[in-house]
Every structure is written in structure tokens, then in C-alpha cells.
Length: 457
Image (cartoon, rainbow, N blue to C red; front, side, top):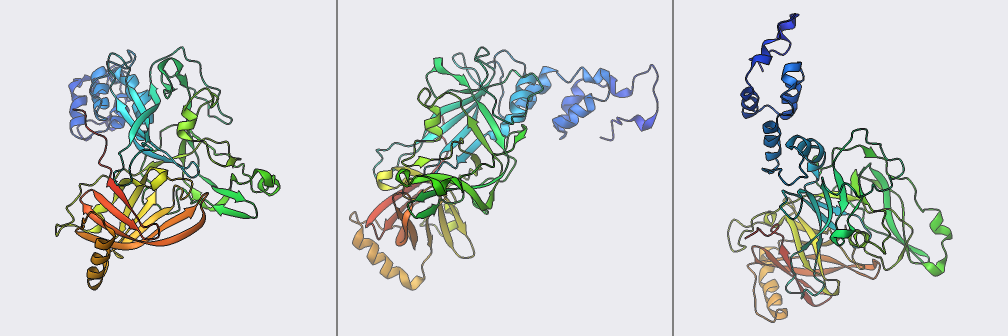
């Protein structure tokens, strides 16, 4: 900022204030127009007492809020734009977007969005879990529904604080912000803790009588779905517990097996967030939503860890087009898994090998979250006639896709036992639909591209 020399060349001033204080207030907005950040602005205003009076000017902080798409702070408990920006947006706006948790077998997807509020509901950051109808037919999976479970806002000041978790970092600054569980009826809202947790080497296992099953690392060391950008909230990080059950499981009663337990692995899982609710599971539905009851006993009582999920939403290309290639399939899809209902997968391509890999973000008791559900590749040209004839022979409706891919998929018994790799064929039916024929199961399953939340009409 050559026009404004904060140090004024090191000269000492007496009663005459430095020339910066005589700048009109509008110059601060002009600085922002020319690319200065709000950090730069605060640093500038902190250089002298006269400029410091501008720091809480409402117009500046309304503008700061607008950078997050928040144009109006009317419905934020009567708090100023400065408070909304500094207590809500600065620390918690990185949450906005998708998160996937590591709960054994099933997993869950949580989406945070910024809500301006209205006369009936105060504004804030809302966390909504993706849920799917268990009644979806195999050829028509339904898109997710969004169930509100968490809210960060400035309301319900009479709700008591939750018990702080052990080793919690005390908050020295008074804050009007509340983190609430809103999964139950409105009158049952209560405060919860949203934590930022450190990395951990702990992985999840299932112990059976005389054998052990490793559940997929979540996330693995290299993961295309894990968003490695600056997505963690700007709050103090707490150390994740190092407690595990590697020795305890050895003396666990055989009559109570199978059982889920945790133990260190060679894969270090990155920092994450977790949501702690101290209301008993029988009195609040939120714990069941984040961590549904397992079919097996579990020694791990921790709340699931949520990791940032890359939100890749591409515009589909007609597979009949010459511009189509496997890279257009990247992103989040949802599809049918028979009696297990609709689940989410993340597709990523390998340009060098011409393959597409589908990783389960949510899973089931047979093939859990984190597992590679299937991987397909483009066949050789001389294979196409035979593949097309086979597809026609097993497809009763006569639908012939413009693109056929071949590959393998994962099936398993209950509890991820007896895993097997089986052959399959994938037909790119349209820009946003893939039909897969599982040869071993002799069944077609449909997968659809996730296109984002429906826009309000």
C-alpha cells in the first residue's frame, strides 16, 4: 500500500496525528475494492486510535458477510454484522459443504449450509444429514432427503451448556454463539459440542470367533474423495483419544462375538470434526442419526469422526457425444444396493489406465463404507460386438447404452465376510445414469449422478 505509509518513514509524531487518520472512511471500502483483505483492513485500523474507531463500522462487516453470500443479518438474534462475521463466519464457515463420517459399515454424509433465517427461524449454519428412502426400487434410486440435526447460531440463550469433554480447550472469549442439536422436536433442542480433533492412527475391526476382519481405512492414505483444502473450523484442536481395544478383544467373551473394536493401523487418519451429545440415546434421536445402531456389539463408544468430502458436481455429457470420456463421470453418485437400499459412491477416473473407480461413502452390513464397490474400464474395440450381444441377451427392455464398460465389483457376506470380486458390465445409459449388470447376482443396479440440492422454486 504505497499510498498509505503506516510507519510514516519512521518519523516520531507529537500532538499531530499521522496523516492516515484524516483519510475519509470511504477509503476503506476503496481498499477492499482493490483487493485488500479484511485482515489487511483490521491491521491498518489497528495502527492508531482514530482509525481503530472504524473497525466495528457496520457497513464494513455487512460487506464481509456478503462475501459468504449472507446479504442480510436481520434474523441473527439482533446481533451486529461484526458479531455474525467474527463469531460465526470466521471460525465456522469452513464447515460449509459436505462431510462423511467413519461409523462402521454404514457411514453418514452431513452437509452444512448457511441460512439467512426468517420470521419463524433465526439464521445460522445448519447441518443436515443425508437420508435415503429404504423403499427405492433397484432401477430408480431416489436422491437424498435432508434431515436437520445441528445448528450454529445466536438463539436459545437459556439452554444450559453441555458437559465439556475431557481435555477440552477452555474458551477465554465470551461468545454469543450456540451449537444446538435440532434433530428432535423444537421444544427439545439442546446444546452440543462440535469438536476439532487431531489425527489418529486408529482403525476399525470386527472380531469373529477365531478370525478378524479389517474394515476399510476411512479415509485411506490417498483418497480422491477426501477434501484436503482448508475445511476444518478455526477453533482449537483437541487430541484424539489413544485408547484402543487390541488387548481387550483377546479376552472378550466368545459368546458375545462378533464385536467391533478399534486398534492402531499403519494409516494415519487426518484431523476431523466430531459432534458430541450428552443426552442419552433413548431421549434424543441425534445419536441414532449420526451413528445408527450396529448389528454387532461395539467396544468403541466414541462419536464418529467426520472428514471433509469433496463436492465434485460436473455437468453430464451425452455418452453419444464425441466429447464424452470417462473423466466426466467423476463426482458423487447414488445408487441401488438391493435390499440394503440406496447408498452414495464417489467416482474417480484414472486417465492413464482409462478406468473409473467407485468408492463407497456410505455402506451397509455386507460391503461397508470406504470399500471400492466397483472398478470399470473401456474395452478394446474388438470386444464390443460380443459385449453388446451379451448386454442385449440379459437386458429385458432392449435398452442399449451408447457406452459399455467392463470390470469387477465387490460382494461380501454379512459383516464383510467371505468377500469376493465378481465380474460386471457398466452401461452409460445417459449423461447422468449408469446401469450396472452384476454377473454373479444376475441383477441390474442403477446409479444416478448427484446434481446438488434442488433449487427453491
